[in-house]
Image (cartoon, rainbow, N blue to C red; front, side, top):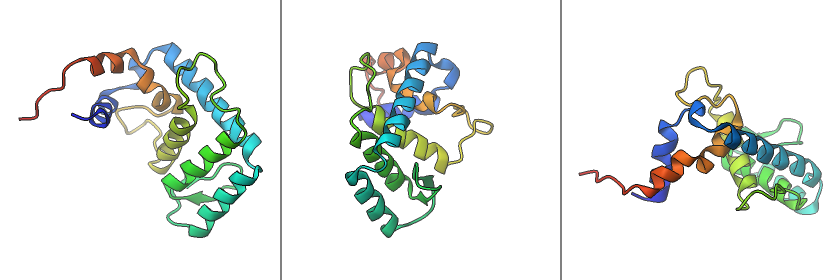
Length: 155
C-alpha cells in the first residue's frame, strides 16, 4: 500500500480523542502561525497576483480566501492562495520545534477541506471541531506505529 493509502486508512480510523494533547497543542500553534503569517502576507505582490488569478478563474464556491471579504473558491485554489499568503511573509512555520516545513500547506489544505465539507463534528466519526486535529494527525505516535508495521495484503 502507498504512503498516501496508509495515511488515508489511518485518518479514516482516527478519532480526535485518539490524538495526544501535545500534538493538538502544537497543531494549534501551527495553525495560528499560518493564519498570522497569511495576514502579514496578504498584500505582498506575489500574494496579490496569485489571488487575482484564482479569482479570475473562479469556480465552485467551496472554501474562503482569507482576508478577502469572504470570497470563496474551489478547495485547491483557496488552499493555494491562502498558503501563498502565509509563505510570502516568510514567518510561517516559525516554531523551532518543528522538524519539517509543512505547517502552511497542511493547515491551509485542512481548513479548506473542513470548510468545504462543512465538517462540524456532529455527524462524522472524526470530530473536526478543532482544525488542529487534522493538522496534528501525521505527528501522532499512533500513525508512526502504523507506518512501521508491514502493509496488509488486500488479496
